[in-house]
Image 1 (cartoon, one colour):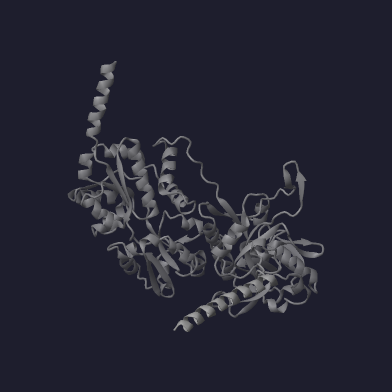
Image 2: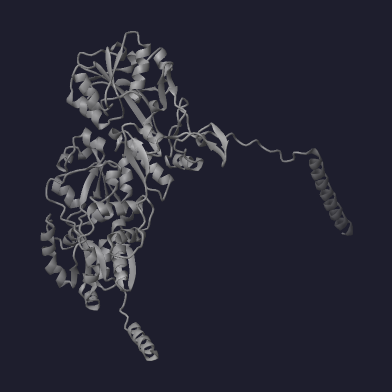
Length: 615
């Protein structure tokens, strides 16, 4: 057996001397390209290849040139980008693009391997409120209003010769008021600029998770312009000559990655804070492409509940962004819920985005603050739209029947207090939901002559209702917001809706509004001593830590303080300035210090006098 062991050792040494050069795997600088490159690298390593990573090398031109000169061997590329490099006309059929690329790329000594299974096309995106207000569904719809809008693009899109900015503007006849161009490494920040209304339209990727996360509206490309962007490994003939089994080694990735899978992988990097390599390893293990033992389960997102109609609104997106900044490494998601605070109370979510009225509950004595919840930060304002039909009253106090959201909803609470102190007898007609369509249907059918809708400014369902029902009117609050009702609802304040922001209005209308706040569970007060020490009988979800509340408050930036009528998180309370401490709190210490200075002064005087006498 000794000779067999010696033979094996010599064979191993011989093989080690013939080790192939490492395969250099590269990528562009985007998150999804980094993930794809890591998936290729890990798949190759699992099949015995030595791999050198040059991930995040630069933009398309940088990585393509590095492949041509032999600095890298393979990287993920998109067929539409390759077509643009050839300055070829756009083609929307993926198979046609592959066929069109085959010969010219072979002449360059390059070859596309089998595609991953998804496309990542450019897509114009806008805010839902803007899309509804301007009736934007396609790129062609932009032409009439582009002069009032700002477009945001990445530098790489701005510089693309065939399917980039200049061709896009010319193809669709667009002349935007301003075009904001940002570096490629900051491309994702365009989504925050869109949410913050610093740009009005942006060019994103169809696989970007922010489109769904922020409830944004992709505009239909109704004329052929953007070519098919099918993702696939691009390699060189020289790399294949050195590694003939490279296509077979990467074959397990053929057609296994679809767009939803890619969006989730990008979200895990951008939201959950995982590295591209960790995300790639988890997915490959689940697909059985590499051995990973028990793959990590998907992280349960920290959920924030909100009314389904508010998904995509500015307050919702501001809250989402602030919580993500305050809690890096956590997956944070918005969860539509018809009763956000109920979802919070039973532990389905950790926070909720609600109008201030939701912090109160109705009792026989009126509206009483709910001490089970606390406000964490202000993210906007909600408007009370009091809407009447053509033959309805001129003021809310003169209504006969008011349609509201279901009992327990903020709209029902406000209407109940108004009815309690109104001069006339007002009946309430609670509906199954408090959205504009439901309230509008109740008014239209005659089940109510007035309705209350609580919504963020310019919310799409309210705008649509007022645009479709030309005889509906927004009642002025100045005619009824007075007296006892005003005192009973201290969280309300006056606001003005103007025709400039609400095209359905023919004049400015005085309305009521209130703060929209991020809300969490309040810390329970009653505790008792159990076997394991102090415990609480309260089984509600635990309140957020002071550190987390302060982090969210900082992430929100400059914003109003939580209203005095709401219970705010203790961490938001203003801290009393520290009492100044006297420099010499004890008289004996002060006398001692004075004596030391006097001694030093006399000693210096004697020394100077002695030198003077010698002279």
